[in-house]
Amino acid sequence: MFEGFTSEVINVGGAEIFVRHAGNGPAVLLLHGHPRTSATWVHVAPALVQFGFTVVCPDLRGYGASSKPATTPDHAPYSKRAMAGDMSRLMERLGHRRFHAVGHDRGSYVAFRLAMDSPDQLRKLVLIDSVPIKEALDRCGSRFAAKWWHWFFYAQPDTPERVINADPDAWYRGTPLHMGGEAYAEFRSATWNPATVKAMLEDYRAGLCIDYENDTADRTAGRKIRCPLLVLWTLRDDMEELYGDPRRIWRDWADDVEGHGIDSGHHVAEEAPEALVQAVSRFLRTDGN
Image (cartoon, rainbow, N blue to C red; front, top):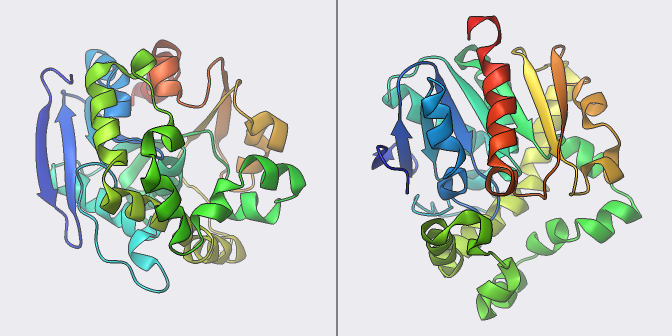
């Protein structure tokens, strides 16, 4: 798995980040979602290296083999601002002053926050299966609550940990079918670690308070994503059902937006890696980038 990649743990100040990286050429940061690790990119990352990119695949703080900082009552250690800061410093330590970022699911919120807080670092941005947290919560109705109820369940104190840790396999329902045996073993090791489960829930707890507040502050100030943005969504998930064309929402947050749907279930990097690689590489290579 990840043949030819270097695996190491890098202290970025405030967290120790496990990362896999390889390649030569423009740097691409790949950010996984919940409850995955960097192993979700096992089919995508090597293909992007073959397309001539340097690929960096970290475990977000709290996830996988990265450290789990102690939380606080306001959940700030698991805010997307804190996670984005980790990624900014990680890329600097790896020697990448400017880079592309690709985020899926929860990782897309980290990539979005990186674009808002460190705009000079990003060349292009790809966001998969998401709209801004503020948009999701402001538009929350009965359909959203029925389908994404886990956002609110995960935000409750203590109870989610007790429920999930009673049977992580039943809760997270991962499978080696698309992931592959080694990636599945890594996923299962993470989800069976109570410290990781708690940290992943802190990610969601931050989403309903400090992340929403940070998004609102950006919206009020009129700040937007400054780099070109590619929005991708999976056609066998519920993004279109909830929001119609997600590009319409993102155009309020960025001036240069394109995108399309991909025929896949939610975990697109595992279920439709070829289509994802083609979409991402085509977008990143446009205009010589």
